[in-house]
Length: 227
Image (cartoon, rainbow, N blue to C red; front, side, top):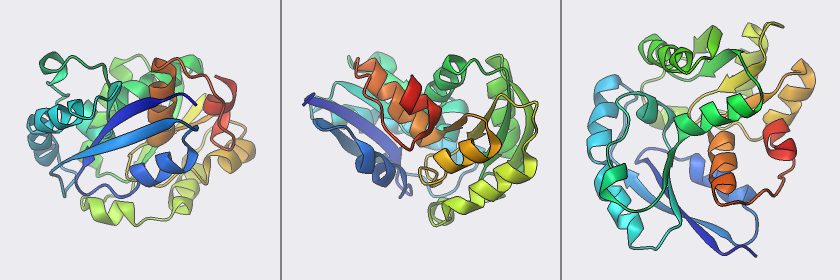
């Protein structure tokens, strides 16, 4: 048993991230969740949500967590977060976790699948390419209502990845912590013979590694079985 506590901050409308992470946690690791108000995945709402994140982080500090995971992909690449200097707890974000995961997989070119609108997709492309990762294709589902994203079946992302996949891609990135993906990571990697990175998978991998926990977790792809 490890005995570590991870603080998790998610948008108030997120119904997926906690469920996926709890199912696969190594024994002795616990997540303790705080929420930030968000119903629509728009640039304006995401920026507003980020201004309220400090209160959520301070509440988690009371639980004596070892680190805080900011569990929102679009919220952490649009506007960023500004509470790191206000608490004395290490903070990681989903978007930074994704970058770490793509780099450890030696990724240079990717395809991206999202539930977002074209506006948010463009912001994500800019973020990824600013980090040195070329986006060959990005395809979104056009959702703004975050509760609708949480109701999507994982095969929707699977079908989109199949449709836009190109052999030039070093990896497939499926974005959004509210989009179910854990069931499809392994079968998609096997079918397309390409590493798959998802927001929740990368967040989990990075959080565990920051705590020096190298335990392998089956069925969650190359990232969590080899690194």
